[in-house]
Image (cartoon, rainbow, N blue to C red; front, side, top):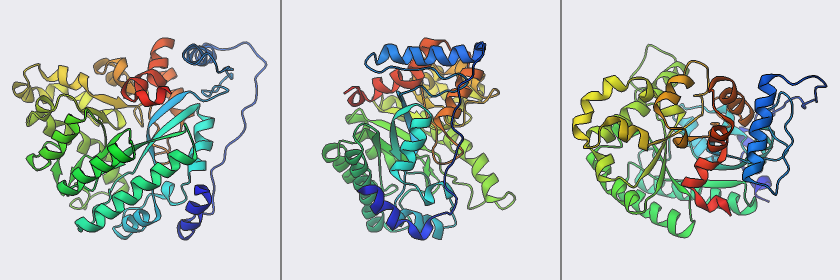
Length: 370
């Protein structure tokens, strides 16, 4: 099985500490308002999937059977781990990743399907040929995961950018042969953002295919910043890099030229939902205005469900364009934590939670309806 193969390959990187967690225990008491909301969310999911019986667990965000769709979940392969580590990028959560570890966490958080993608630093380390081979290895591996665990995974395919020709070839293979659910890109490559004219052929092809494009941030400034530690740099620059690449797509009017790309922005869109007034200068490039374009985008909830971020995020982004995302196994993400944060901090109705948990993703990824 693929689980055993991957575990063997990753032995060199394996940590001694495995994931743990306490089992949920039922509470014999009058339910609180929070507990009732959890129950409502579970019942709402049952209305979407009537063949599944959901039991709301008091004080738990997870129903008896999974139903959520996680659009921000990561995987890796041994060669990519080795290359990343050699470049000084350490991601402990991916060192001992296996499909089964994802499934265990998904089941705890009520997640039926995770759309998996690689994280930064991508697959390009200075050699186009090597990057193409590594992108293909990642995509073929993910396709095997999907096959071995039916219904539990989807794929945002890896592209070997900044190699444009290689990316175009991989789009063809990933979409036409592997039937990928979308493409995964980083926010920047060698300091160049997605709106850069260099990437126009890739954007045009993704637009032609009406593709879903999931963007994960890359810390472009980390190599030049010396004041902060790497963890602090990544913590700050990740959100800023997402903001910069969105601004580049708006400034160069890529969003106008390529209106059929469905972009998904990680971590609630970086800082974009909170600095709209600073972006007003871009609006002159946009016939329908800034807010129209920002509200066309999709945004995931990974690390964006705290009580300070979520109210502003919700004010800009239509509920129909918010996607459930955990960032597992990075950033401490879990389905249970995200669901709890959305319920406690979002002020969402039961029907809105159902949209975020599942229905919005089904609109973008209709394959999952079957």
